[in-house]
Amino acid sequence: MTLLPPDALADRLKSGLLSFPVTHFDADLQFDETRYRAHLAWQSSFDVAGLFAAGGTGEGFSLTSEEMDRVVRAAVDEVAGAVPVIAPATGGTAVSVAQARAAEAAGASGLLLFPPYLTEASQRGLVEHISAVCRATELGVIVYSRANAVLSDVTVAEVAERNPNLIGLKDGIGDIEQMTRTYARVGDRLIYVGGLPTAETFALPLLELGVTTYSSALYNFLPEFALKFYAAVRAQDRAAVYGMLNDFVLPYIDIRDRSKGYAVSIVKAGLTAVGRDGGRVRPPLTDLSETELAELTTLVSKVS
Image (cartoon, rainbow, N blue to C red; front, side, top):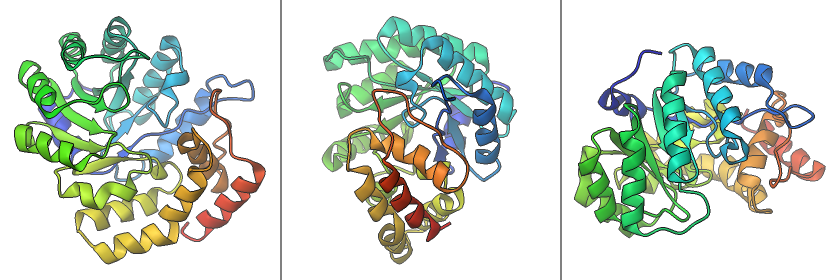
């Protein structure tokens, strides 16, 4: 895909729902490119604003840098410009910089910068980490605020000031006061992406805080339902939103919350439930039990 200027990418991404596709593995838990490409072809056939390859739902944390590069290249090639492909940058600063450069070389449209691996960091350290990655690429960068990299409003304002190609903040915390402070200080300089697990749950209240889009894991296996939900959120149709929350999303979350890591595992199980074979997750994640998969399949059948 022709390189999108950061501002053009920002406009595209904030205009619609965002897809975070799973990464398929074979029986030996190696990357299954054939099944992955088939999934991307299906995902990109709907009206989605961006496709984030090898993200959290895509088990990017379980991929080597070489595997990540292969996943990103497969995504760029498969969608052939129909949808912007956003690549991940993970780990420490040196690793993230290398992955940012690899993503640009692979033809990705943008970058999602994850928290640095394991270690805690000061706000000053996070400013330098984010800035180093932004300097390493011409791609538009979205920074993910969560875990050991929760960004204060002052930090967000500073990295936005220092880095013209920083285009967005993905919120994985859901702190209403913090988001209010951030939007009040930074305003529309950035786009704001909802990044909490099963983001549909928080989409309506966060819309009031400037979070105009979100990463939908449900889109992986229920794209039409996910798009219908997103449309209801943007229209602020509370009756429709809460109807879909009660009919599907909240019972789905009840299954998701039974084990740590199920936020990813249940998405692959959802694909299996609709007949598209999501396959297994890599350790340290664990798959749903057969009983849970049957329960999920019954739930999915009510809305698919």
